[in-house]
Image (cartoon, rainbow, N blue to C red):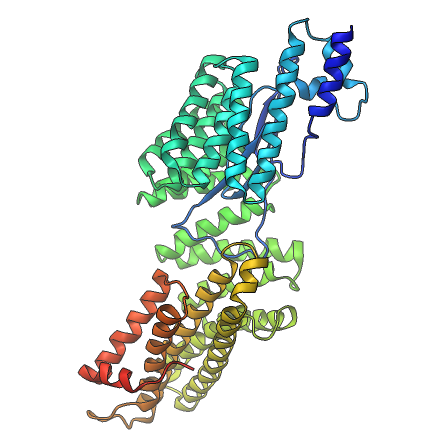
Length: 531
């Protein structure tokens, strides 16, 4: 009896209260009843920024029976944990009752279980704080504790291996992560059989790992196996099947199999809608991905239908006084612009601009981007009317020019603010915040200057004064400023280059060369730093 009392006291000191702040797609099994429990949680971005179809980064950290998911949702696998049932949090006598349910030798196992949970939960805390080295040490301790307390092939070991694999994936230590994923799957297969749902979820995680590295064929094989297991065990329409179907669709799209990808993604959306999750963030995100597939294949009518559906759902839940609604409306406006419907596109963009001015500071880069979009719509309107109504076409170009000047001003203010506060932002903001803000501002600045050169050339064409040897001075100045801005902010002031920024710079450079010929270098040498 004294041994049991001592063990209870030790457990009270070791036990870490299970946190339920970060639940994710989890699979746990009650060791006593054998009943399967599934739960789901998804996290939305603060402003609902559009997903980059070519960058399906996966943030997953798993801890015991609790997990956190950031980015693309992933299913995660967890070991059996009898302590969840044995020690209910709301039962002060739960420790003693739990021990009484277990035979004599299990007191030691419960001590190992408690220590395993302490290591795992504390490691997760360190992970969330960005202390990856400390988290790694504790995840390694969790593996050793699980092996010592339960044996080399126990599901607790599988869970601990999966956790450490996720940490190595985040640290980009891929060579260390993959063997741990495979070991976790192997243990679960030996413990529960190759067709158990826990194996399916672990294989799904492996698919996430491969997808993050662009190992598309390995990801496809993993997702297809995971989906086969989940359908057999949970049924075709289960939300866990929907999750794997969506990610399989993403892989197929990246492999260039658009038709198959569309079918899987549409089925995954339909299953969410039939399950009452049609207004969930995860469903909206899948709809956005689907709309981008349509846009990339120039299926504008299909993209518009999906975008209108997204806007309807977001507007009903949040109203128009929300940046999430603004983002949805702006996406629809850009789709309408691409299809040539400038009237509706302009109305949506103007409404977005008004809401942003109410919700954001006047120099926020989203306002600058909104003005750039409006300028481009005005240019399209000009091209549609220049043969029938020259005065209206000129008015549209004047409006576009005004929008662009304001967009350039805002972009410059944003860049200067980022650079001046760089050290402060680095100290107090999330890692990469200031870098990304600067990249976005520079991209908008270059696009606005490049577009301004187009406006000036269009104005010259409308005025019918162009002659063979004439050089449009305003267009030249805009292009030179674009080139100078790139060189100043990328080469001299440490704004990291991106493919979008480089593409816009090269576009400006090519247009300048067409206008000035070999005089570009001479013009640039006489040009002062961008201001």
